[in-house]
Length: 225
Image (tube, rainbow, N blue to C red):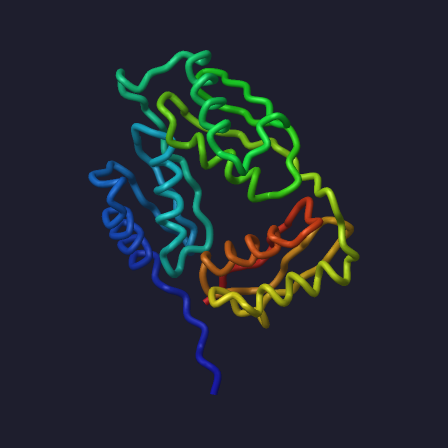
């Protein structure tokens, strides 16, 4: 007999999100508020770095029963962390230059009131992701807009791309490949289906981005219990 599908009570999900936030050492102590409605988690309150805002969102996503996270946390920089936009731009370009995975010659950086915008082109999604991760924790950064586009150098056939992604999903211990539908539209991958955790949804997207030739991924997988 198939197991019954059950929705976890919002109050239990809320308490476990709070517990996970407290468990995450970089976030302790915190002033983050948590509200949950039908599995949709809303985070509020102040933190002193953009890195902590991002870490809080990832912590909430790890909890079973979370369907969506709305991150309304405000970054309030302490006096010692304040930087001018010019100073932040120097920090960002220096940090990007230290990561050999990021082709900095193709990336433009602009800063306005502490908000960093990245633009340009890279051949792989992991390079786009690495560029953002490098600057999240820098002093003075209030937020990041990652507008870098992915332009692959080589593009396999749609059938080959789909097979590569399907094989990778089967190999992954974190996904149930039978629950995920892969559709190829040119160089765009569209994912459908239903999984049991946010981590599975995220892993499915990571797998899709890892295939050669992928320029964009639309993740329509839903979290269902």
